[in-house]
Image 1 (cartoon, rainbow, N blue to C red):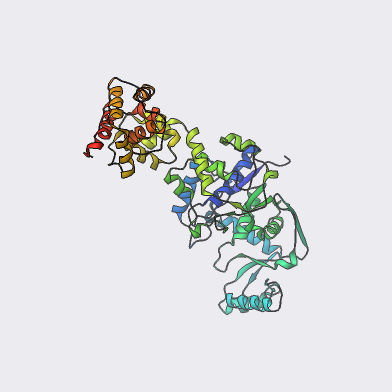
Image 2: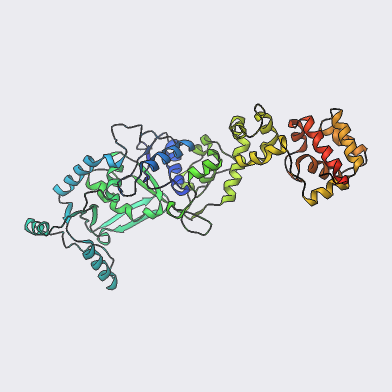
Length: 467
């Protein structure tokens, strides 16, 4: 590529990362890794009222859990840092001064009430609700008079009429008219940097080459391009991703309680499941099966990004979790079993139950089946066990006492005259207390002989009504 690839993820620490945020981070990370570039993490914490260091710590931990390590950012500062916008005040002050000195920015003394009145008047007249520019031509005396009234000015960027064009990496050619934008605020009256400004300044100074972000930022792009150019920089290539929506079709948002990455990790979802799901939401891969991170990187292509909204489907998440469990190292699943099964039995338990595990909660469900006591059977199961008959259970107990494995136990029961459902249903019900689950051969291999005997004897006693 003609310029080094540098992408960034720039979250605001105002809440937990939801899956829409994470997909944006993932796509930028994948693109940087695909082209041997750099991935930057920048914390945009200029919203003083809502930014919270605890949220920053949470999002940093969430990205690391997912494996999206950054090349520059918090904890990895370089000459382009610092990477928290709250620490970049001097950088922004220098940019304001440069724009004011060049006549490209000016103080605006309009109150919020005046601006709202002007906005409503424009809408009623059928005009775009842009700033009409009453402060754009104020001379020194006019500014002094407004200061004397006790007004605190914001700072506006002066937009020159004319076309603003670029080719969106997702949406194709885009064209805006500068005259439709109006002069916009780059510094608030309280002295804080507006999002449009700090975001653009940092992209320019950090030499970000590609920005993949949600389509809700489309209207910001022409303004940010103008800012970067006014400060002597080259705007990045922009790609605006269709939003990630939930089952009701509304965009996922941390404000409306969308699932956070932290909550999924706490529930036991594995990083690979989230990666495989999100990498396919709005992006096409050449194959549908499980992909390790290196393969996700190798197959990522901007040309495979779609324009239609991407729908988050919990069933798909569970599908990829199932795949992740099957591909996970045994040690990961054994950690789930620690404290839930007898010490030293974790490996055997995972080997027998892996195909039936989805989340740690499943370990809690199956551990008593393999090692504990079963509750009294429900009437349906009790009737099934009683119907098997005493000779059936006598044959099963004799086989277990002789050390029979699953295959030999089945052979003994067939020799006693049982087959098909009449054999397998009561046997599974007696040994597990249910009619579905892992292969009985695997379960029997990890269940103790004494436990097998006790459960078969309990089933045998059912006709006498002793349970």
